[in-house]
Amino acid sequence: MTDMIENPDEDCGVDEEVFPCLGRCCRKKDALFMASYEKTCPHCDIWSSLPYGADLKTVTIFECSRLGYGKRLTG
Image (tube, rainbow, N blue to C red; front, top):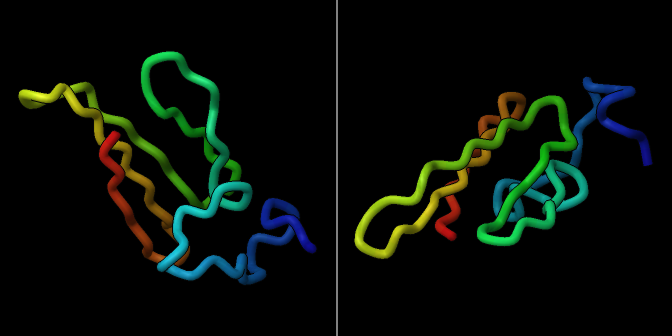
């Protein structure tokens, strides 16, 4: 399998239904109080909001600038 960082023009093979793909787009980091992610793909970006609302939930936003995918996860 070719690493995307070495060959950024090759299709990464991640379909929108499975985006973000752990191991290809990002990896989950150990955190005590909330889910935390680290990007592993140069085309992906990850943001997390501060806790908000009555339940004090955070939102993690994943975006792929290459394929145009985006997903919001509430945690």
